[in-house]
Image 1 (cartoon, rainbow, N blue to C red):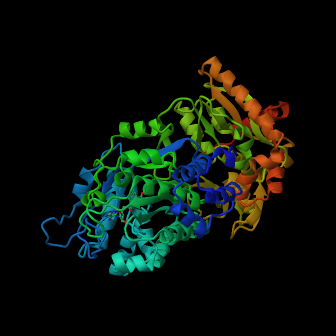
Image 2: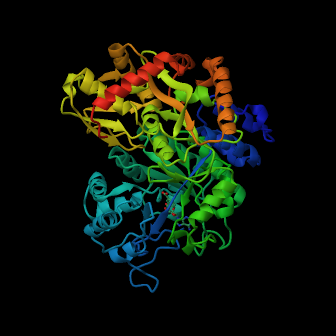
Image 3: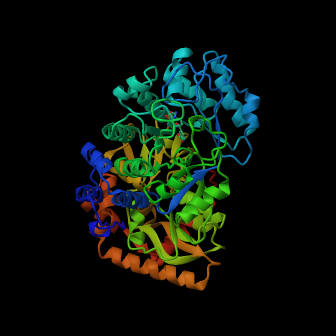
Length: 624
Ligand code: V47
């Protein structure tokens, strides 16, 4: 952990110091803390705190997606005061898109289509299902992010289907995630004033948590800068934080700056100030400690403010957003779409790594040189905790994804999953560092309803993040126990495990579940212990490697960096991971014991273990 100490931030507002202390100690911020920050004039210190927190979560990465917005109709049964987009059937500006119209807006390079629009009084349920199905049929690589909670609730009432059924049918035809709109501000006072026909907080949360339980991750928004108070903004964030604790299904939080247009809520040209925008982004990063991402939605913020927001806690720029109407009808001054090159430039200018992502935030492409991959788990902390960046940028990325990026030559160096290293051995140079267990690991765990032999013919859910542990599991099942099971990948951001007989988790999630249990799964197996008892060898989960083609100076610099970081970390194992450990529910002592269980240097026993494992998995046909 490379946290600044209080002395690194020159607080002008001393009231922020106790808040920073809380953040550094892993304590949750309160309503009073949130409101104190909103009332403070010390924007720069708030931004610095948020930036530090963001760095720990996503390093130098800023995500964007090539996306297209589709608003299939502006005809809406509601008349919300803040909305300049909606109209009524028969009015001259009313429009309705056919499926052909929708398909004509898409191109094969798009990765995400974001569908949301008016609540049409006459459209049939089949039309919505056909819309999603046809998009997936014609553009299989496009992921559909569609329908806000307001629309889902409308379908539920209009078509007399339970919310769960609405979502399941949509998922069945290809819905991947849901946008965060319709949340507005979770305040009855504001709802009565501005959108009294619209769903309130209770229904919004019911729809989102139901979606999470069905394996559909969602986003969350806050519409700010109209009649709401600071307190209402913070309460909104705290309600989201509580729901996220329960389901873990939110991907990103998007503060939406109110565009006044002709809404009459505010004078036409009275946009939110850049100071308020940046503060809201930064405070959301600090309050929403359990949200993976914070989005700077350039459409409503403007490109300039969004670009500064990337150093104020945001790590997500939405995307190219072709075809947006809601904000532009209400007077947004941003362009209608941003070219991919322009987004990349904005992110690079902010000193970050432009990461093109898919709908689940898996990196597809990156657009900067000198990138070092970082496995974002507690056990890799000793390598990075004293890692001064110098010429390298750090991209936190799950092991399996890092392998994919490196196979496209996008990563210069990193802690590679053992399997990725084996697959790319010809291009990679092994360094003398690794993550190897001595006996148990505690963070590569099979949570099961059955004993090993009972898993014959059963289905095992496999975390999307693993490249090596899944092979180890296959080897154990086939070679140690003579059992054949079916593997099914579970995508990240969702923790619905009910369909599986066993579940393989790795990293922080496994560590947390090892301590607190995974409901429904009585038996817990530590794969490294299973391996050790069988082979009497350590298990090497990851190795440090760098591109063979890298210049010699770069290789030398990285070696020195790693060595010095590791030495410093090993002298302070009880403190370096403490904060990270606390976030996943471990005491400092448990964190220290966990870190002490690893060998970080690749010795002879580790190399022998790598060879034995390689032979075994070569004998096992694997297809996951
Ligand atoms: O819910 C309506 C807002 C939202 C105005 O999930 C307005 O990735 C500002 O939810 N000024 C829809 N905002 C947009 C939305 C969204 C946008 C980008 C990304 C994602 C995501 C979601 O737009 C509505 C409402 O809160 N809205 N009118 C207005 N005048």
